[in-house]
Length: 473
Image (tube, rainbow, N blue to C red):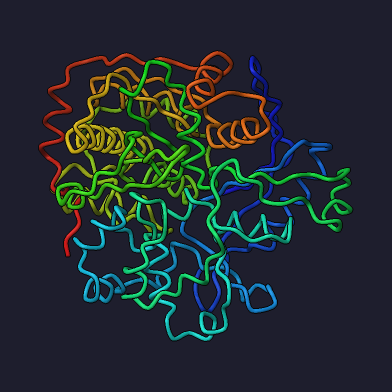
């Protein structure tokens, strides 16, 4: 994983993106568990702002759920825990004993994931760090605090904590009280477009930026920014797949879907730009392939994908939502084990394993798109693939084939573009959300993939899946 700083000149008829700095984002394994090097990330941000030169605004987005704890002086209490750390194992049962899973979903609309902030905070109860904490800042809010000296909790990211009621856009206070979670740890909620402060004098000195430089609250959960940058111009009949380390597959809705059927299908209701709901399912995504590449010594991707395209389709598939694939390490072996356990041919070569992963992701995309339409009673005509996976032509074509729907791929840098567009809109440079999407469609390179082949093979593969993404209480 990497952090990036880019500049995005934007106007009513123009939108561009230029990466000016890239820096490592390496988790660190300590005796107490897996942690983020958040000071290294902040240093990378400062270096990037120096490389960017004069800017009109700064906005920050990142991954969700993880956070830093601050003491009464505003000092960070240790490195933030990584969501792949094992400290939340077994915590869900403790939570559900106090707030049953069905009731928790009916209030928060968030799918079960062991790393949700709610479970992290319950896991931390009784620790010295949480006892000393007086503030909790989600990762992009923590970076913004260090840049500006001002604290806030951005709403789209807060909605992933499983502590927000998506019907009201406010805290689920009864849930928090029953679980012993102190909501006063969180600073006041902010919404995309709200001012988040200006760069502190020592930050301007370190970056060489002339002041004042405003920091604008954006949709700080990177998926919220990416969905804001879906170039859908034909109305609301579209599904999206935000692809990268994760695949986030779903719909943009006006209201949450809080039914029991939605809970058992493991769909989540996260908040998006302008009060919309990101109704989606989390799938493990290209993490599976990234981990294999790391295990293999980081070979070039393009030749591997060419070889994978020549492999027999749907020979073996795995459940891309299975928690067995969550932790890092030994991914090729775990994929082989999963195929062996389900009586399928065991992929052995790199090309066979890569094809198994991509077929499995395309199949998981299909199941999520179908389930979302059914559960939300919201049919779609097209699937938009945004994020890094939009560059993967094989994955995009397989997704079109699996779904039986056209796929429009791009932009690959959707999260960064969504970030820029919210800043530009706050500055009066672009119009409303439909205008933002029309601008994206005019200015960004997009590729259309039409379904090919016989869908019966995909139908059979869907029936073969032994596990659908479900949650039990």
